[in-house]
Length: 73
Image 1 (cartoon, rainbow, N blue to C red):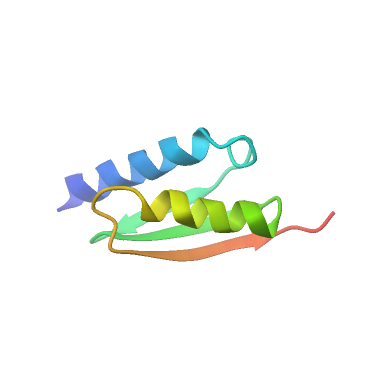
Image 2: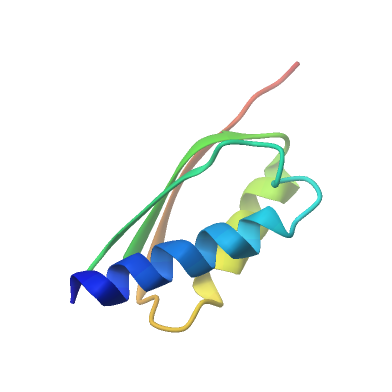
């Protein structure tokens, strides 16, 4: 199962890297048994939502725990 989790983590990270608002940020993606946890900063609430949507659309993801924190400048 660990290989599947590693594949999911890589796919979520790749998806985040394609997003113009999210690719410049270090987002920690952790996957355990199909449950993805996102940690780190988000530039705005819309980007935080989008990060969750990107993760949810990855094959094999059962749930997303979005712990991204919106940093106000």
